[in-house]
Length: 193
View (cartoon, rainbow, N blue to C red):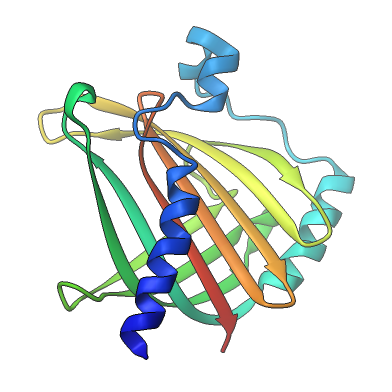
């Protein structure tokens, strides 16, 4: 039964991940052109947006568990290889200071039997955040930032995070872009613990 559930989850999440094709352009890059690479810290969220975020945060806060599928794009564009990884996931979602949201997750990589801890922040202190969409039970945020490589260069990154609460639980979707092209995505379906 467990293997059947993993296979079913894989098929469902692979379909969701396929919606984000490897090496596709970031929606913001397609719309903005070269100005996409300018990291401008946006003005503070207005009062109405902060109030709406606080209401959504209340729905999202708590302890969650479920399954996550990660899609990784590998190789050159002419010979793309897509790798899928499957994790059991336990997360704690908590609202922080100044409108931030913290997601602390423990992942168990099923195939390799490895554990790892991942911390994500929305509206944290690093980079620039842009609220793309917020509603009664969901939010979508873009985060642009630069990271350093081992040889001292920098890489431009963008992560688009969507969190959606329903009667069935919590859906978390992430799309990671490096230099404006999609290199990985994640989809997690979680239930309240």
